[in-house]
Image 1: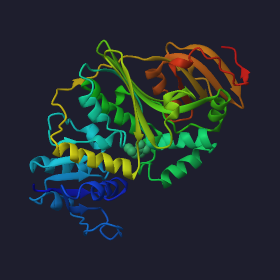
Image 2: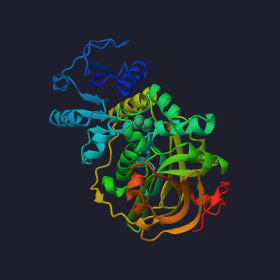
Image 3: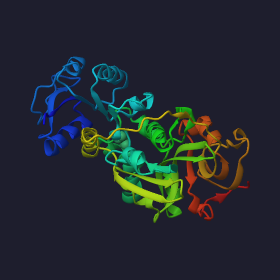
Length: 395
Ligand code: HSE
């Protein structure tokens, strides 16, 4: 049988990971015909052919069957994607920003498992394993922030030291704000909502609470209560309406999400029959991302395609939850309907335990900027008595 001819675009973390997975698993069925990179001068240890900088020249080579895109570049990747449609080639990508912008359903030559959850085959699972549909999906979808949180809560590191080693390990986006502001997991959640619910979500449909302002005052409070934080993306559909958020959540040490460590990602799914499932794998880095790209190539060559379907526009509904907010100043007048359960003060910082509308809270300027930290109190903790040993404020 003729080997499929691959054009690999990008030879950074994901591109090299794909190349190594191909060397290990795929040389008999796939041929890497060419590799395109941005900087043609850079030494690329282990690459068996000369890389070109002429990406479109490589894609438009009539012998290329499949383009594997591993750059993270959005504008140019859209041009490359358009060229592959014209050429009737297959496009396999790790580029979540690009995928979130594509109205992709209907293109049977597009796969993007590597864009969500690293090695976790979550898109394929959603496509194939839940014939009765899904009612909720919750996940740790960002490897870098989970790595940082693990360093803080397991090793006692500061946030900044955790960030530094996550960067050295190659988990963090070129623009680190995408990870720390929650843009990266929110984008992944929006992609998964297409496959879980058949819904198209706009960026504004997801309430995002950044992790950027998370600091030592927060860590002390959380540790004193024997809890850990996980950065969790959640989408739930009820009566045709969706709530979607990305937020730091307080979880008990025995909670399955607390056991998601380092760069691991995990997803918990509840199907429409009420059955729950939990999946976990490495979510960032060379091997997980490269493996996911390679698995897409294999899956496509074995006949796997995403289902063709029309996506409905999501109808968002306000979400009321219990939260703890740490802030330098009182902001509660900016919320229309918040119930203060308790509050404390320590070294000029106030901690408010509230029940409020997350959509409203996410829009408050000092929450968006990270000056205030927000922690969603997991459902299993809402009865918990918090004991920060701080001075109690009158509510
Ligand atoms: N920066 C991303 C993460 C890379 O940390 O999860 C993988 O998508």
